[in-house]
Figure 1 (spheres, rainbow, N blue to C red):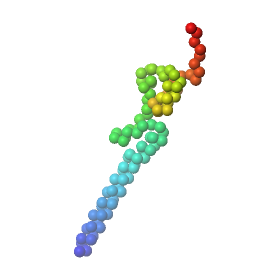
Figure 2: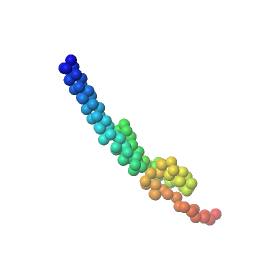
Figure 3: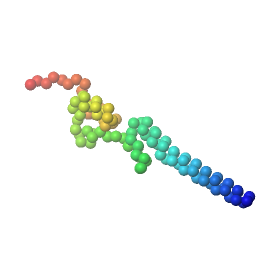
Figure 4: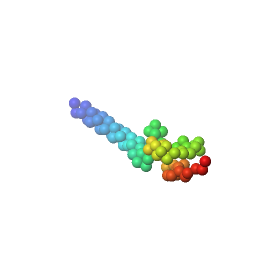
Amino acid sequence: MNRTIDRLKLIFLGVFVVLSAGASIYHVGWVWPAERCEASGDWWDWRTRTCAHPIPISDITGRVIKGRVDYEAAKADGITGKTADIARPPATVPATKN
């Protein structure tokens, strides 16, 4: 009986150590980097553990967002990213001569 208790004690201790190590690896490898990435305003992909910076489609295509309202709506949706100052339309549109 004493040998059985010692064996069970070692088994439970081993399971505890393995689960604790797994939880630590999960937090160091996935949870903490995700929190840092999302705190800086970037996108976190948990499958590849990649912190990606969102790039607006206007930067890829070269198309400028023309209207101030459209620009503000795109900014609110989070698709303009940190490089949006390049394509920002003026606050007031100058009058055109017809």
